[in-house]
Amino acid sequence: MYGLDTEVRTGINTTMLEPGDRYSCSDESDKDQREPGGISSRIAIWKNVEDQHKQKQLINPFSEWEGAMHREKLNKGDANYARPVEGSMTAIRGQMAGDRISGEVRMLIENIRLLGEVDQEGRCSVRFGKLFNHYVKISNKLVGILMRARKQGLVDFEGEMLWQRRDDHVVITIIG
Image (cartoon, rainbow, N blue to C red):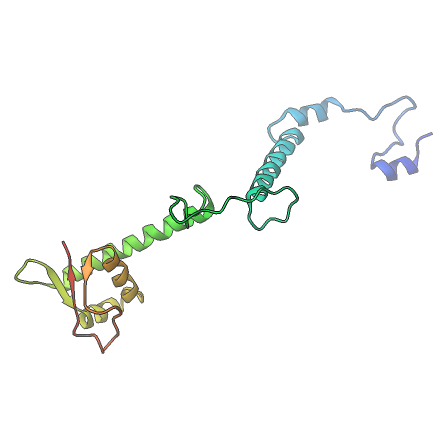
């Protein structure tokens, strides 16, 4: 009645089964479905991942899914314009990059105070050439960090861009 044909199709060795035996869940498989790492919990986790992916695809402006609702176009006055979705990996990476750059700006200010001289108004300043020669050992992003610090209103200097040798005489002053 049972034989090799059944074993090939089901993967169950039926040679030890008696006629009338059934392929039902034993206590062992019931236990597997109740355990935290069991099949039921794994299916639930996968279903959750699937639902999250579906929701993301439904709002993805590049999704080709049928029925995808595309977000309405943001206007420039909107607070979320040109900003990543809150809590997304893009937002997290942006926050980390901003923190790293802020740390580099703080380090730049400390180095200017270390190398600079206080003028008659009480502001600390240093020439670009001196700062550049010192900063070569610290970072290769001096000019970019200076521009960022100026944009934040922390330092001031003449010109839009500073070049090694050509602008060595330019004075960089800490504001405030």
